[in-house]
Image (tube, one colour):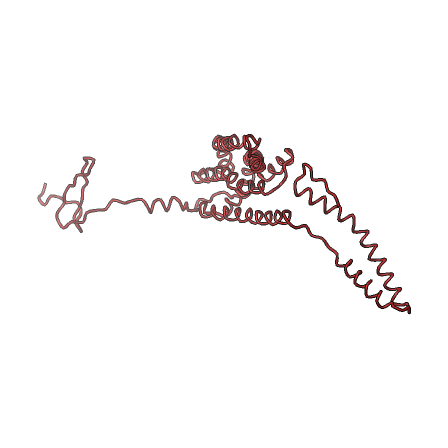
Length: 299
């Protein structure tokens, strides 16, 4: 079997070999059928030495029926790496989600933010297709890097919207205000990362070809996630978040009030006295169990 490997990656070559081997499957099936027919004829024959021929044909038939092929070497190691990277992507997404849950004191907010990850995957596949770049180990690593980058845009929106809701804004008003005000930070974050990866994605310089798939995957994911986050996240926020009830307690505010230092009163045994503070004013302090002192005399 001869396979052309010029300007072809290992995955394409492996698929070509598999196709050629699959074309041989009908020929093998026909040979199995012919061998089985000969074996049946010999079993019913009374010729001398037929038993030896039956044994040989049976051995040949067993070999044909047990024939299978499997690609090993670099291709097998590449598939194993893809499996490990896929598990890493799933684990990274789960860890990012559970990291945001205690920060937002909610399961729904981080759930909405995690929708930015598939928005980035759209751009990754589109960019690799347009640039004719293969989905390899480097581009898969770029997808994992992309998870932490695209989630930050959703965090900016949802966190600001939650603060607006604490001030009394409705869900719709909070998320629209967040999208308008946080547009500039999101755009600046996108441009900083995008412009930094452009030279790597183009492949400028010697020895940079290995990192080209990684950079292109990240750039493509950034393009779509930044554009779609400002549309998809507000829609999901208005669909999933409920209006804040008046009796709902602001946990952050309660914790801040408890942590605030309170001025301590001096419980001395003496009479009423005036104690000057550091800023020059005077604080009126009373002794233990005493109230404001009035003159004992009349008048």
